[in-house]
Length: 319
Image (cartoon, rainbow, N blue to C red; front, top):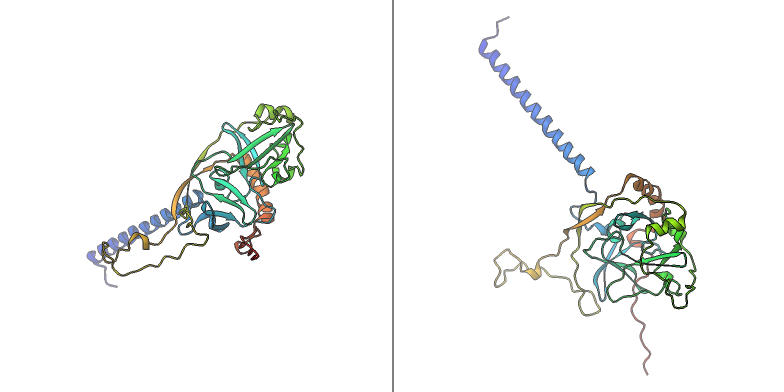
């Protein structure tokens, strides 16, 4: 056997060192990539890259006079602020929803109802622990979604009022799955002048008196949750859908070749900054307990939406 020359031995050692460097570099990059994916998974689950967040759970439609609004795909008896529970916080009673989109549509914007359309959500930018109107009287507490400006609901004891209001006994305000505590026919206030009807949420200390137990006021915190949303656009004046945009690739006066004028540029979803309420562990446990059964009960596929569909007006008989 011929002895190995020192030059060949040195070359082999140098090659091994280079291979070690490359191997360590590959392992390092793989670990960094895994860590980044783990952080992304543990981070905001609401941000998506190519779709509107609410598209998963409903449809964007045009409703006069609001323009583009969002309608959830739900069962016919569904109504907002029913499937969840109330938590006393340092900022007031906060609504904790069992629906996956509840963190957004119950803390921003407004809700409206039209018999031929159903319930729909109007996007807004102001965050609140709960976008509702309150009323309590004679040992009963009720709430309804915050309507748009200029819109009012009938009183909860009105025959049509239960379409909008959830009414419970005040002592049940902190119960789980509060919709199960709803009263079918709330009584008319005893006071003829209705001076005892208070249009405010029940104070925590008043609730503790009627409930017979104390509650812990939770600190309210919310973190940024950017999501992709369709831009809100006003519907055209006519009662018909907007004409589809035709993209013209030909150069036009005042626009460089290859650059489309603004009216021909496609409308795309853009990230919008929302805030999501951070729940204590105890509240997360309550949500996980009821969310699956609530979603199974009320949520339906988009192509099987049970809310009423807008119908054209019936033709009037000619005289």
